[in-house]
Structure formats: structure tokens, C-alpha cells
Amino acid sequence: MEDLVEEVPRFLNSDYIDVIVKKIEKTDNVKVEKFEFKPVTKKGNHYSSVMIRIVVDYVVVESKNPKHLSFILKTTFDEKYDDDESMKFVNEFDVHSREMEMYDTVLDEFHKLLRSINDGTVFSAHKYWLDNTNRALIFEDLMVRKYKCVNRIERMDVAHAKVALIKLGKYHATSIIFKQKNPQAFAKFSKGYFSRDKPDIREFFFRHFDGLIELVSTLDGYEYYVEKLIKFKDLLVERGIELYTSHESGFNVLLHGDFWSNNMMFRYDGENNPVDVIFVDFQIPQWITPAIDIIYFIHSSMKEHLRFSKQNELVQLYYYSLKDTLIDGYKYTGYFPTLHEFQIIILKSSLHVLISALLVQPLIILDEKIESDFFLLMSKDEAGLKFIHDMYHRPNTREVVKNVLPVFDALGILD
Image 1: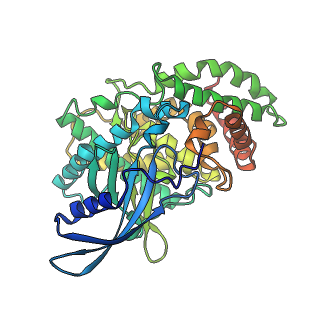
Image 2: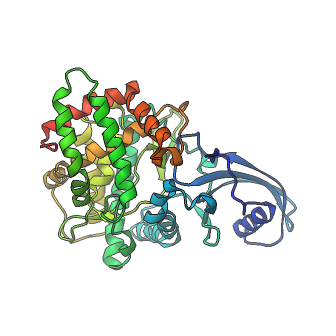
Image 3: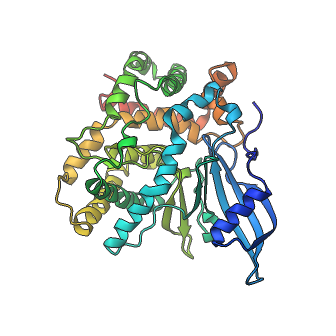
């Protein structure tokens, strides 16, 4: 498979750039003088889409003043890959149309709701244009406003986590109000990763689970867990389906769905303290328990020594942000759990600790020097299996497994 990181979509030419700039400027009297393409992320930082930074120098004819603009184009892989085994997950889960809908209607409506309670919070980058014909999304380059990602391998400290979870609480609260006003708004977002009609994602988790079992079998003193893991593998999908099934009698929100370090960008003050965060990549929204987003964030993106020691404190912080926005801000009068009840919701969702920390995080903290892309990640051939083996046998993954597995087992999840 050829390198796709630098691949430029066939439709992305000078005429297309001209169209984008005209839409941004809201005038046809634009002359593009030059443009260039730059990578958005380092290799291994993004998997299911093509993302390109486009830098343009142009002139608006009326003013004759030169302008410089940087924006992001996000689109799908070329259609020539649609029949590739590795693309079945992306296509069957319909991640791109989900994200297009989020940017087309949902996020705009969320921001309107916030403004109605005099809250200026912004969840997402400014959208310039949705090009449905080419399955492309064009939005602002957040780096222009000094936003940047944290290092996914080094992971987040408490200061970053607090900024992220406070805003997540507002996001979830706003989703509840939006659905209350528009009961069918999230009908398209009823299913998540685990579903009986999505065999490819099931195979993805199984291959990672096999990699986990193989690693644990080599760890001194961890023999006890091997048999438990082997037996639990057969239960993984059913337990996952149960976890990812929305129960209308429960407390549900619209998930971000992929709430980890690379899908948020932070802005800092003069002393390098994080003061704001913008969320990106809205491809996997689902109407379900907020525990999914919270657990996934803590156990995929936080520094190793913080994942358990700070979890309850961070859940509490999120809870009060959710409560302040929902009840004090929107004057919501529906069911709302107490903090104690909410902590129990988190505990009952502990299977997601295994998924986040032991099946997903090994990929997240993979060294940037290791060649990886979406096709290799989903591959069932020898190269794909070797990739998973090498990923699990790296020192930082071994540390995660040795720390998390005993705690996870003590919760009784493997029994």
C-alpha cells in the first residue's frame, strides 16, 4: 500500500482552491496568486481521513490588498481504496457523513443554545464550507489562533484534563437540551462501535485482544490473568454491545465519540497554562451514557500515574460542569443523577477501561518512528499481525498493561 499521508485528492487543484477562497471571502472577485499543501499531523496521528493544510496567498480585487490564509481540508481516502478490506469499517460506520452532519447542523445549533444562556463557549473550529460532492470539509486552521495538540505519547497532565472535561460537561449538557427540543435529532447516531452488524470492528478488537493475551503470557507473575483473558475474549463483543446500547431509561448524552488527546487542541496563556480547548473529529457521535467519553479520555490520554489516582476527582469536576450548564444555565428539570449515582454509572461502565487502556491506548502511544497507517492497522495479513505484536511488546505498552490489568481484574470485570 502506497504512502497516503501526503496523498492529495484528485479534485484538489487550482480551480478548487479558487472556489474555496471565493466562498470564504463571499465574493467572486478574488485572484489566487499562489498556494501550497502542508501536512496537518505527523504520521501515526490520524487514521481514517485525509487531512491537508492549505496555505493561500490571494488578492480581493476591490481592495487590492494581499491576503494570506491557512485552512484545513478534510476528506475521505480516494475511491480507489473503497474495496480495500481495511476501508470496510470506515464505510460501514459511515463516519464521514456523520461528521458532515455534525458540522452542517448539530454544532451550529449547540452554539446557538449556548448563546441563549449568554455562554460564549466554542466547541469546534469555524466551518468554511461543506462540499458534499467531494465528501470534503473545509474549516479554519486552529494553529493560526495558537491552538495546538499535546504530545500523545507523553500524555496529558491534570491541568489539560480539567480544561477538556469542563468543556465536555458543557457539550454533553447542550446535547441533552438539543434533543429535548428535537427528539429525532440524533436518530442517525443510535449505534456505536460495538454492533452485531459490524463484523470488521469486532475483528479489530479481537486482533488487539489476541495481542494483549500474547503479551500477558510473557509477563512474570501475570500467568493468573492469561486464562481469564482467554475466556473473556468470547464475552467481549456481547459485553461491548451491552455497554454501547442506549437505554432511554438511563442518563444519556450525545458523545463526542473519540475523545482523546489528538482530537482536541489547546490554547495557552503567557505562562504556558492551558486556558481553552477546541474539539475536532466528530466522526463517531452516539446518544448514550456520558461515561464512554469520560473513561475513554482518562484511560487513553492521561499520564500513567494519574489514570486511577485522579479519576474520581476528574469525574467530579466534569459532573459539576455538566450540572452547572444543564440545571443552572438551561434550567433543565428532567432526571439528573446525584454525584454518587453518577460515579456508580462510571463504575458500571468499567469495561470501557479495558477497551480504552488495553485495546486502544497501545496504538495511541505508539512511537512516531514506527510505520503505521489505517490500512496496516486494519490488515489481517502477516504485516498487520506483526504490527500488533510489536505494538504490544513495546515498553510503554507493557507498563500500561502491568498497571491496569490487576485493577481491572479487581473490579470483577473478567469474572
